[in-house]
Length: 158
Length: 158
Length: 158
Length: 158
Image 1 (cartoon, each protein chain N blue to C red):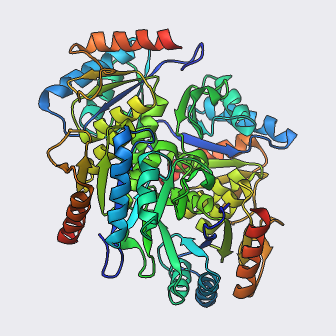
Image 2: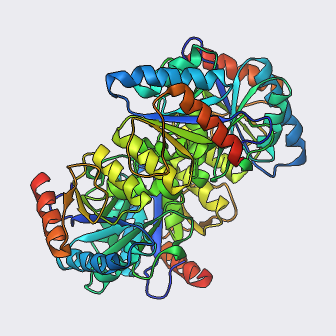
Image 3: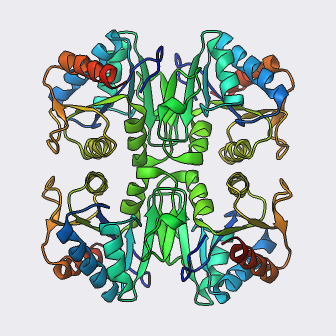
């Protein structure tokens, strides 16, 4: 949980090849994160990860990408800080642990792994069109409401 | 996939505090793995991990435990080779990657993360009373049949 | 290597309980990194890691701390973005891989592991009062000159 | 440290492209580990890692290889159990943590990283023609004496 003065870090998880409609949702989530003054963490690659970072950067947000590979150049063009983990899919859990709260978008298997870790670690979790594997996942359709709820939850549990 | 002469490695994933009935199932899975001359890999701790290793050791099997923490003494008493990962839940993916095939028992969230990684990596996956998140999971009720099928699948894809 | 527009990321590695004189050196290194408009990455804990982050924050720099444990509250008070790796000392290699260049301060064993990784990965490496294990380590005494050289080297190899 | 009945695990660390004379030394170290009834852990690839595993297998030892990549087929032909870490050089620390004692052979940079981790974690460490970075490294020239000392030290500290 963030100390006084440290910005809230919101993790957004989602696939690199999502359904078409999820790109716009992810971009709006990124926009709302930036407008709220929060930091975005994501997996740094394409698809949902790129769309959410694009939305955040278009609104002067700060974007962190936790990359699976060994080369920062794999980061999409909207990542300010590429963290080069070199640990493959195990980087998914670094995203989960580094986020004050997570927003899951869509139904990729990588996303499912991150949802599972979040549930195991009791990390609050908001879902948009994602896996229905636990009542602990709070579902939203509207990106703006999802981000608003995320921030409320972080403030409540800090 | 194992080369000629290397033993088949079967990963068994399941929670440390499973439902009561899963202990016996796990122990029988371990027994069948050992009787078939395969190596068992698991998470090395209690619950399903301990029961499956117990079943394997009672039948002269070889058991590997990929531990999340920093101390080999956390391994249950049926682990021959404790691998001390020191990387927390990220060790789950090492279990998935090191197994020729996986058998998931029960419905823990850690197990769900391993199922998700197996699906993402296209690793064949057999389930006993586990998460129903993909048609790629081949379900069995009988431990003996589950292990038999696992070995068939490894042979087929090697 | 950073793309056009991405800020240079400088990793500073050093012990949590360094010799007394290294605190001031680390703080000046942090100051110079911030004044040059670069991002600081470090291990996020005390000692050299805290001093360098303090120097950067006092000059409006951005500071990233790659933490070994599972809790962001372990970060020192000058870390803007705590990355919670949960992978213990293995996080050292994430620091190395995420940095465009490294500055090693002092002679801790953790620092030696990071120097070894940097040498193995051919990452440029500047040393201040550190291990003398390779002619590839470029030694400096003056923090300002060390940071200046670091930036020159990143620009040269990008 | 191993419990009663668990075999001693000896980690051998060394480069994939060592000096010529180190191959024979590594092979003899592997032979002595196997003859003493201990388990060998190494990095699973070529060079020192292959020679030590070859020596162990020729004497009916059990060999574990902690691989950096994502494919068990990268293991050399003398590895019984390939552990597929998928975490690159960060697997070096898993070797260190999983060994009851370490024997370092030669002067690679990867080996230096493992020595550094062993020193940081206070893991006993024997060196053959390796880095001279600490008086805690116990040096030997003769492989047989090195393994004998390793086993003595594990017994002493268990």
